[in-house]
Image (cartoon, rainbow, N blue to C red; front, side, top):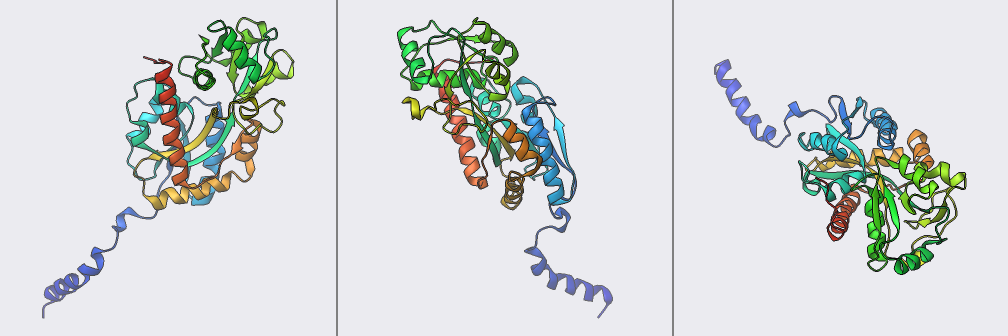
Length: 325
């Protein structure tokens, strides 16, 4: 038998065994550096979460996890870049609740629910509800009573149209029985907190770090929190449940997302490694400084949370007629 014929027979016999194996060219994940897109500028909370997380993932998987800032258009520019990437786990995104609120109030070049899935939900933090120095209410229950007695006469500030500050305030008004508030949008929380302390506006729903200065200086009233878990080191103030608003909850979150359809084995490996990063080190320390609570959970539970969050804020935006063009 010729050498050529013997080679052909050997190849034919080997074919059934090889057919069931994955293509070797795919290699083990990750076979090259992984991109971690942050759809916000450097220096913000999302960037501060992404960098220690990327360091942990790099140590865990033996390949660089390279953080790339792609800011703009309420996080939609960077998110769109991830939505266009292959679903192979080589392009990830660290983002926050802005991902949901942006999808709720504006047209996006992707379908937030169908094009993305949560790999790991990292942490969450409630907002703090603040009143101006001369504002009569002293807590959330008194705030509800005052708003009912003065419909449409209380001005609240936000970091801009469609921000979590606006949506959290509008959800509060809806859950408290259809109350009426006047929205005053600002270009960021800095001028909003300044005007609150000056009494130009009466009410603000914001993050603890953005208001720490005016709170510690006693320049505003702390009326309560928008969630049941008070941040450690935060001011003592009532929660929604303690104020008769058990159905109200709002806040911010941070998560690691990927293109929907990422292989489950890659997603689960990333999920386990991200949950490990929450147990200590730089990431855990930063989250504590933000008044945030780590939220390790399986990837499927995180994805269910993401879908529910998208649906909730879309409903709030529709009910309040909030739309950003």
